[in-house]
Length: 272
Picture (cartoon, rainbow, N blue to C red):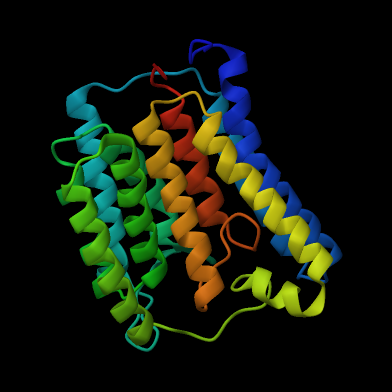
């Protein structure tokens, strides 16, 4: 393994983010999406890549925990700030943009939880509580599979309980929190499967390429790789079973930035 500070250690992280996002930008550009959609995704990709390319600086334990608490607070913010739509509050209002809070911060929360083996279950349960209250089944699924990935890496039986609770909470949140699907944002693969299956297969292949790069090639410890890959799987599964954003391949800056920051953080630790 190359040291995480070398340029070559950044390549898997750049590839894991870039492959699905660039495939999604091509789909948006050629598929008739509003002109701003591929541009915004491209700017978000540049932001994520910039985070990955920054020099590795390992935060102290105190700073790392402060960041984790701040991210959990951000996850709660939509409940206080809105916007509220049919009793649902999942978005951070940033001027003309509304960023999905779960996909923006949950990837990094998963990585940081993996670095806290003693506290990972309560960290993930706190994130799950927010997802349940918002309600946001996609973030609930992401918590569930992040816990499953962590269990696969650590064999901590408590994570099985977290995954089980997250499964039930996500089902309930799904019944309470479904909104109409937005074109080029939600259920992208389902729609393409009906209208343009070859394009859909290409996007799915790119998404799986990013997923397996995180699992097997990212220069990071196994718990962090598996927790982050689990979060990606959970968000993607939610987009297949209900009206939730198709992260990385559909329109949406929040997941691109969120996974970019998480990949940048994960590759800063020795892979062992």
